[in-house]
Length: 489
Image (tube, rainbow, N blue to C red):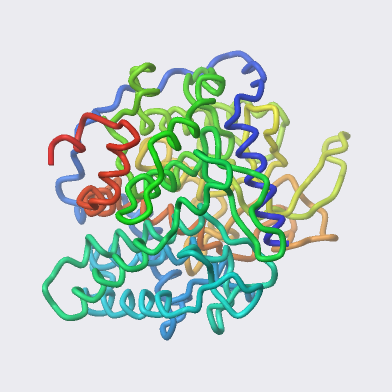
């Protein structure tokens, strides 16, 4: 099921990123977003300036990672409270959360450093090899899901290149953040170098210069490579910047070669189109794209941060227009991305037969877009660094309007759907009378961007640490990025 979840999402992303036809936006067009100051500047006094509900959301979301990750192994669950395997990408977000917790004074630095060290030691010592069982990964990569009990491959899931990259973003973040000359923090840096250095990125190029989605012992390399605009940007940057087995710059050129076909206008916003918002958010959690440009963005006189900002405004405009007449959509309740949903079924809604899905990549504007009325709070909340005015309004409105159903111990439950009222065939969550469907779980890969992007918005915690990463800087430079902080040292 989870392997299908990954492949379905990746297939959608590949299609959207390869220049599929985009349906024309219905009138009237959304107003252009206001100009934004691209200078690197943060709130001067975070404690005094943090909006109350945003700070509450950050604290609750941090607690998700601190309390649900295994304190003995450091492994982070894919979802909670439903029992699940560990998601290696969620570990990357958990590691980043620990540094944010220190900066926001949720935990003490020695506590966070010790939890980080436990996690890195466990990851380092897990067995690797080509066997179908009894290992956690191969060639430095990790399986998409590993068992919470022992860290070994869960089921028959694939060795995932992009999820390994998201894990390593957290590892690199910890390497740069924990910079003190104490035994614990020095060991964090040593293990981080070992983990990132042993990844054989060249092996993951069966059809060079692109990088494959994954590999399994049973079938070998998957028949898909990462091409087109999607969440794989940071994966290519780490592969380009690898200190041991770096890929050639042609890899970035091949990945971005289809970008021009994806450059379009949707709901008044011009840019690289990618329906689900997580594709705009994941890489930007760790990479400050403001003011730095590769060859493609230099031609467009833009950058990837601005592109993501416009994507957020386009989704909000879509919710205002609400072409499918779903309940709840408006200027302050919006957000489509990959998330849990109510069920895989056809059902009547306002006289029409509509398709609903459980976990799926949801998005708007492309030929392969999908919208079944399911809103994911992470989509809007994780856009706070790009578009704080509309993201904060969405956070505040969703809590005020629906908080009793969707906002709890660890912040926002994964998703909700006010239009879905059927109480049969549910995969996750429940239907609440007079409200609709609500997810029953928090998902680590959706919680992570919320906390990290709040931190980047308020004080730049993650971006500032990652700007010191030699591997990331080298990857950006080899991909052709210039300007901004990259040239300021």
